[in-house]
Image (cartoon, rainbow, N blue to C red; front, side, top):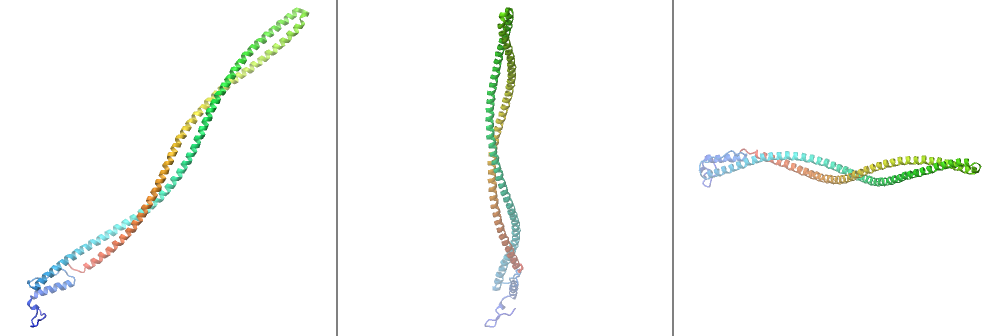
Length: 331
C-alpha cells in the first residue's frame, strides 16, 4: 500500500484503494502531461479509482482520436496549401503572359485599325479619281458621238460636192460640144467667105475671130474638165477618208462606252471596299478596346492571384505550426 493523506482517525485515504489502480492512473496522467496519448489505465476494481481510470481512458481515447484527425487534417491542409500555392503561381504566370500578349494584341489591333483607316481614305480618294475618270469618259463619249454626227454630215456634204462635180462635168461636156460645133461653123464660114471673094472678106474676119474664140473656149473647157476630174478624185478620196474616220470614231465611242461601264463597276466595287474597310477598321478598334479591357481584367486577376498566393503561404505557415503542435504528442 502507498501512503497517502490521513483522515482525522490517522488512517490513509488511499489505503482503501488498490495500489495498482492508483499507480496506473498516475502513470497515465504523467504521460498525458508529457503529451503521451498512448498510455491507458488498467481498471482493476470498479470503485471510485476504477471509475476515474475508465473516464480518463475514454478522455485520452477521444483526445488521441482528435489529435490523429488534427494531424491528418494538418497534413492534408499543408498539401492543399502547397498545391494552391503552386496553382496560384502558375495562374499568376499565365495571367502575366496573357496580360502581356493582350497588350501586344491591343497594340497590333490599334495599328491595324490605323492602317485600315489609311487604306479606307486611299480607297475614297481612288473612288473620287475613278468618278472623275467616269465623268471625263462620259464627256469624251458625247464628244465622240458629236464627231460621228459631224463626220456623217461632212460625208453627206462631200457626197453632194461629188454629185455637183458630176453635174459640172456634164455641163462642161455640153459646152465642149457647143465649142466644137462653133468651131465647125467658123470653118464652114471661112470656106464660104473664100468662095464669095472680095465681098466675103469681112465675113471671113468675123469667122476667124469666132474660130479663135471657139478654140479658146475649147481650151478653157478642157482645163475645166481636168479641174473637175481632180475635184472628183479628191472628193472620192475625201469620202473614203471620212468613212474611215467615222469608223474609227465609232470604235473609239464603243471603247469609251466599255471603259465607262468598267469604271462604273469599279466605282461600285471601290465604294463597297471602302464600306468594308471602314467596318473592319471599326471592328479592329472595338477589338483593341476589348483587348485593353481583357488586359486590365488580367492585371486585376494577377493582383488577386498575388493575394491568393499570400493567403496560401500564410495557410502553409499555419499548417506547419499546427503540425509542430501535433508533433508534441505521441499517439
